[in-house]
Every structure is written in structure tokens, then in C-alpha cells.
Amino acid sequence: MRYLSLFFLLITIPGLAQSTRYDSLWSDPAVEARIQQGIETHRKGDFTITLVDKQGKPIRKATVDIRQERHAFQFGANIFMLNGFPTAQENEKYASFFKSMFNLATIPFYWKTLEPEQGKPRYTADSKPIYRRPPTDVALDFCLRNGITPRGHTLVWDEAMFAIPDWMPKDTSKMQPIIDRHIQELAQRYGETIKTWDVTNELLISRYKVPMPPDYASKAFRTAQAYFPKSTRLFINENTPSSWQGYRREFTPYYLLIENLKLKGARIDGIGMQFHLFEQPMFDNTVKGVAHTPADLFRAMDLLGSFGVPLHVSEITFPTLPNNETGLQLQAKMARNFYRIWFSHPAVEAIIYWNTIDGTAVAGEDKWNGGLLNRDFSTKPSYTALNDLINKEWKTTLTTSVTDGKPITFRGFYGDYTVKVTVGKKTMEKTLKLVKGQDNTVQLDL
Image (cartoon, rainbow, N blue to C red; front, side, top):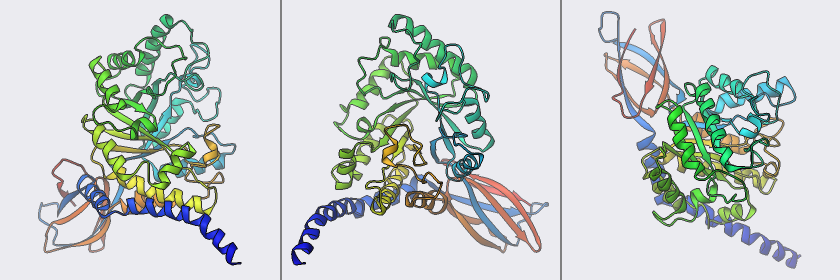
């Protein structure tokens, strides 16, 4: 028995050591102080509310309930499974879940499945169904009906499996006019309704065997600039290692790529940074505390944030490894840690989870069980961790009283608020916005 106990101790110690290193990095007082200060400074503001009656005189006494309804910050996910489940009940569960958690949706514009037959794009509701590819009009309508910001992904991608149509000619001299027309058509159809687009995707992944026109990336940006409204924001999006690893100050490859495109006339309005832990060694090194440390993340965000445009953590997958209770709790811990550090950074504007339901990711990615919900829509600890942040800890709710006509002052997260004022037996409701960079002193006429 003594030897058996020693055996279990020996195989447990490495795992405990890994967890200890990881936890020590994330609980470091300096890291926690920067996260807390960043959230307090960049995500919250001061509000002053004065209540007056119809004659403009201050209300002397009232009870006021203040509730934040919507974030200004963008918490999102891809919406690839919209109406994509076998039953109406499942589709309703997915829609309800999405609306309860997210105010941004990434809509799939992968060309291969958007236009599988040349000249017959799948925009409308009556389009032939393709798994994980809802017709783009349908996805956009869902967003507009539910106050969700749509995000187009992606205009051009040199990926043969998902992006390049089978009918595309292999002659690169013939490809460029087709790409230009594609971008122009999307601009004409969606330019007024989808205001943020990934123009390019994963340029730093080597796909040199895939035929593409010379300098197609900068041309894609210039074409988008020509046809989309000036108010449209054009993003570049890049893979996980290029976004967060290989830091070399201003000689970091992603930094150099952005500079290169800008020198060629690309207007880059935002920078996408994927965070998929799809590879076992990458995941293991993260858990060991030797990759994607808080210092690594701050350094990457500081560097790319120096361009002065918004950062989107554009695609996120935290695997459930191992696929048991230990893995479930680790996924939840990582989700909370990483969301907090991203939320704290002033350059980050959006945090976008990728596949939210287990068993629905693309083949090859589904093995990681990176969803927030199980396939039967039961919640995982990672859902609870993020829901607690997004809908509880990072939303402001308070009840206060007005005495002697004095203004109400409070500090809250930026976003949309409902204010219920009760004077005697009468209750009135108003809506307000707490907006970053503005004087949030308001008068409510009751």
C-alpha cells in the first residue's frame, strides 16, 4: 500500500506543479492590480442624475432602481448554428442562449459556402441549407431584431477547404477581377447594415500552394475602401500564434504585416487576434504557465494597441481537457482569467467566443469540446464563469433614494440603463446611456 500511495503521489505532483505555476501567475498581485485598475478605469464611468417634475423643480423624495440592460463593450460569438439544429426546440434554445449572453455576432461570409455555384449566392432565407452556414440575410435579420451588432467574416481568405469556391479559376490573372466584384457586391448589399468586416484572414499561415493573385491582401483592403461606406470599419484578422506569441517588439511578424499593408495603402481600422487552443502542446504549455502568460498577453495587446485602432479578440476556444470534471473546471478557470485580462485592456473593444455548443464545431475542432454548453444545451462551468462576469459582475444594478432633491451619483459600467423612479405610489421608467468619454450628467423630467 505504501508503494501504491507513492506511485499516485509521483504521477500527481507534475499536474499539481503545473496548476501551481499557472495559478501563481494569474494571482500575482501586480497582475491582479493591473486588471482591476484597467477595468475600473476603462470600462466604468461616473453618472449624475437629477430628477425634476413638470415645472422643472427637483423631486424632493423618491426611490430609484437603476439597472444596466446592455453593455457598451462587445461580448460576442459566431452565429454559425442559427437555425442549424434538427428541431425547432433546439433552435429556440440556441437563439435564447445567444441573446442572453452576447451583443455581437460574427456572421459567416466564407465564399465557398456563400456562393457554391457561381452567380447564385446564398443570401436569402430560401437558400439551400448548408451546415454551420445560415443564409446571411437570415443571420443579419436576427441581429437587427435583437439589438445585436453584426460582424462580417471574411471578405478574402486563401483557404481552399472553407473559403475559395470550387469554381474559382486557377489562373491568378483571372482571379483578381472576380475577387473585386465579390467585395463590391457585398458592399452594395450589406454596406449600410454591417459596419465591421474582417477583410483578410490568417495571412501569416503559409498557404503558398494555394493560387492567389499577387498582393491580393492590400488589394482587398483598397477595394473594400472604394466600395464600402466610409463609416465601415475594415479589420485584419490573424491566427493565435501570430497574435500572441513570438514577440520581437516592433519586429514582431504581425506588427510588420500591418505596417506593410498600411504602406501599400490599406486602411486598417481594427486588428483581430484569434485565441484558439486547438493544439495539445499549446494547451499544455498554457496550463504549465510557460505560454500565454499574463505578461505575454499584456505585451501583445500593448504592441498591437499602439496602432491606435480597436483590438478584437476575434475567435476564442478554451478546450475541455481532459474531458472530465477536472477539464471542465480548468476550462472555466481559464475562461474567467483570460476574459478579465482582455476586458481590462484599453485597446480591446470586443471579445468573441467561437463555437459555443459542444458537438457543433467544424470537423477536427469538435474533438476539443470547447463549447460553453453541452450538446443537450445543459450548461458547463465555463458558461457559469462567463455569465457571472458578463451578466452579473460587469453589470451595474442598484437601488437608491433621493432625499431633499439631491442628485443621484454612482459609478457604473458603460452601456444602456433602465431607471425606474417611484414617487409616492407612482412609478415611471426612463432609459439612459452611460457613454465613455462624455459628460454623463443628465436630468430626468418626470
